[in-house]
Structures are given as C-alpha cells and as structure tokens.
Length: 180
Picture 1 (cartoon, rainbow, N blue to C red):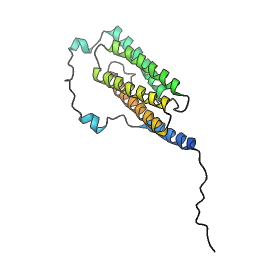
Picture 2 (cartoon, rainbow, N blue to C red; picture 1 turned 180 degrees about the vertical axis):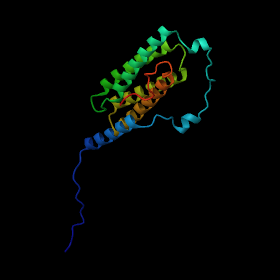
Picture 3 (cartoon, helix red, strand yellow; picture 1 turned 180 degrees about the horizontal axis):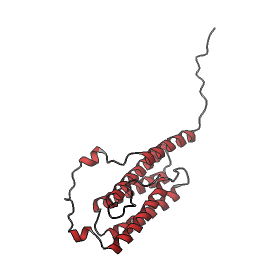
Picture 4 (tube, rainbow, N blue to C red; picture 1 turned 90 degrees about the horizontal axis):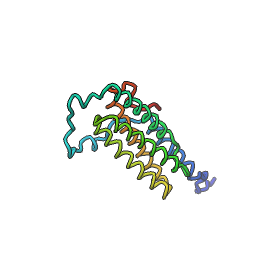
C-alpha cells in the first residue's frame, strides 16, 4: 500500500484568517490590562510633575458637575470606539469615532482646569497614534495594518482607563475602566 505523499489542505480564504485575527485582537483590547508597558513606565519624563495649589486641585462645585458630565460623555465615546468592528469599509466609522473621542477629551481637558494633565496628554498621544494607524489602514488594508490599528486602539483604551481613574476622585462615576 503506497500512500500519496501529497498533502491535502482545504483552501481557506484570507478573509477568514483576518476575521479571526481581528476578533482575537478586539477581545484582547476589550479585556486586556490597562497597565503601562515596562518601557513606557521606565522612560524618564523631560518635564517634572506639575504641582498645583489646593485651590487649583479642587474646582468649584459647579465646575465639578460640568466636569463629571464631560467625563461621562468621554467614557461613552471611548466605549463606542472600543466596540467598532475593524474591517474593509469601516475606516470612516473609525475616523468619526476617534474624532468624537477627541472632541469629548477636549471638553474634559477644558473643565479639568489642569487636573490629570499627564493622563490627558497621554490620551492625546494615544489618539494621534490611532489616527495614524487608521490612515495606514485606509491606504493599505492588510493584516499588518489591522494589527497596528488594534494595537493603537488598545493604547487608547489603556490611556482612557488611566484618565478616568485619575478623575474618579472628582467624579466617582468615572470608573478606571470603561464598560465593555
């Protein structure tokens, strides 16, 4: 009995691999840790931490209310962004969701009056990286571009979690991790 040396493998379209990879990446992003990477944590900052006077660290009660409303809107916007499906033809939706997060972050920054400045700056940097990844994705849709976008999305989620944790004292409803 001679067996054929030819290996038979079923043909699998590349899109199935892409969907499985994307799903795994999104699940990881949604359920992943929000801690910073060792390299980011060990990088020294060029600017010393900002010090604020007691008056500056505690906004007036009306300001806190406005801040908390903006924080709630920001959290909802991040939640929406985290749950977008990445695929062909979804870059416009991604761009719109990122623009919304950026707008909500701007409102939080204005109402925070200098509070959580480091976390806000980190969030702005994460958004810029995600926008760059989306630009790459829209010009060259590939597994590599999807992976880069998912990675940048994880960075946005981690930065948002850190920002919400920093603002949770002023706004107790600002949990450290946006709902999934």
